[in-house]
Length: 356
Image (cartoon, rainbow, N blue to C red; front, side, top):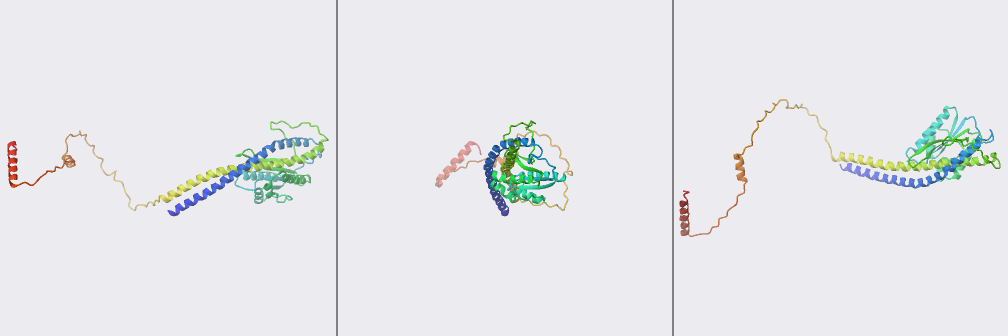
């Protein structure tokens, strides 16, 4: 019994320590989420509008004029998989890995060569585990990018991807990441990066608008398109970063309540096992049969009127139980003559009353 109680105490202490850790991680993620959410909400409208405008302008160029909008026969695909460096964020990384696996499988089934650029330690672990072909020339960016996430580092990666696309190493580049919606919801997104194509509006409205270019369309596109692609990649990284902190904050909040419930049920079961030992019942070697079927049914008792007489036993019990006062007779020594006179007076009193 003492060992069971000690086990319960150790488990309660362990759970309390774990709850302190999850609570601290929740507060840290909440503080980081605020900054990451502000960054992506300020960046997203500009990035979406710039990408839509420049992709429309780039698609209006003649074939061969825009190197980032050139449509090729897709034989080589680069998948940029964006995850986090750390875990404990629910299904955040697993959802992204599932979507990236789907993209790789579809491209492989179509007879295309697929290479993967993992951004984040979890993406690198998944690539090694699933035996994806990793692209070369990016160094240790998979593990160091989120240590210092800024526009300069994102621009370096985007420049290398654009150089590989222009050189013909890749015919299509696809981004796979988790888009931030709110703290509890992350949307797994598959987004085309290269080549840039014209997109329709949210309600089916075409962005085909005639612009006035100065000095000319080709020069502006060649200068603005690389910047738009850098902004697009940076937006995807900020989306994934904010979604990571939202997922971790939600997971830590749910994990704390789950630990409490599990601990209470486990402690209750252990305490019951310790405080209420139950012996295993043994089967009797002799078969016991009930005698209810053997005894005759009792005869009905006749109705009796209540008696007003006291039974002798009841009378004796009442006499014995009734308190009686104890009398104390005072006495004092008297002479013989006095005693004789008192005796005579008593005899006369009795004789005159007729009791004798």
